[in-house]
Image (cartoon, rainbow, N blue to C red; front, top):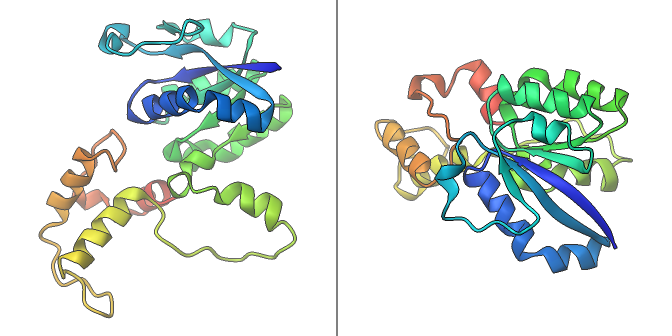
Length: 222
């Protein structure tokens, strides 16, 4: 049975959820794919924050990204830190080191996607981003594999969990007319905070006035 070693970058809400899914479903994943996924390293800034989490014997925390990049046994890097500066540096370096990358980082792909995809192609590795689109709904693979013979010109829908949460709350509380025109927006700030408290939103807080900024729409609603 083939074993594929991976590294997690960051260990926040999304990364811990990924960690738990991989641990809880290890047998299912192996039986279906014929591959055993082994978490080898978890890059964090302060390992002391995670003393309550029991790691498998194969995994360890590291605080130096080079410990991941220079480990030739690691085939896949899973970037779950967020942001567009250090995260970009890590993804770029991983691709150059011949490691495939999986990311849930909308902002990074919005700003540097074409460059990183080209870099992955040149280094004969993959850059997978299903988790960054539509809350992880498997639409990207469907578009590539199942709908490859179709000419798709437009996708319409609610594109992220925060938007979905706020619109659902507005609808449930009667804040929207039948035609969709917003009757009240005074609760938007509170609803955004509620979404943040329930981890529907990314870790970085944004100002309500920025919700409708064109750049924010491009990044947050990818």
